Image 1 (tube, one colour):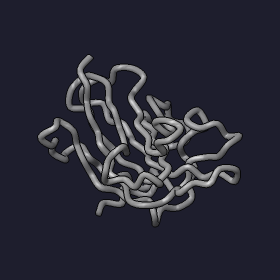
Image 2 (cartoon, rainbow, N blue to C red; image 1 turned 45 degrees about the vertical axis):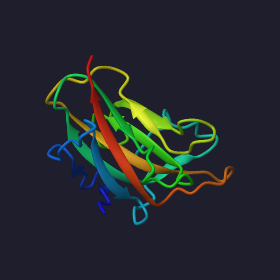
Image 3 (cartoon, helix red, strand yellow; image 1 turned 180 degrees about the vertical axis):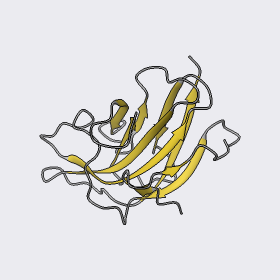
Amino acid sequence: MNTGGTACASPMDLSAVPMGADGAIHVMGDNTSAQMGTTIPTVCIDPMFGYAGYQVAYRYTMRATGILTASTVSMNTALTLDTVVQIAAGCDSAAATLGCNDDVSSSVRQSTAASWSVIDAGTAVFILVGGFVSPMVPSTPQGPFELILREGST
């Protein structure tokens, strides 16, 4: 199992991972041992309710110009794992957020983030996967997950 890199200290590079038959990159990750970092900005989560902790970081270089989607929605991610996914231009809290998501819906705690604009081929981006932590809402912020990356045409 791939635990990713500790948030921003040593992001795992997914650029050379081959695409599957479905045209997506699939990697298993786990944030169980991750530090309680909070690199994912509050633009992704309403800070009144919680924050993204236990983050792992990945680096990816776009193969073609297009929209990048990063998702933990998979039968290989526990339905109880509450994830937050961010796509960013850099790997620190000051980096521009290119897309983020906390929960696909009120009943699905897994997340799918799509870049808000087209990203050029050859551009390196960072994907941070964290667990939603809240003193007000019960959640499971740590555990194994499947990260799925998919490039879409413009």
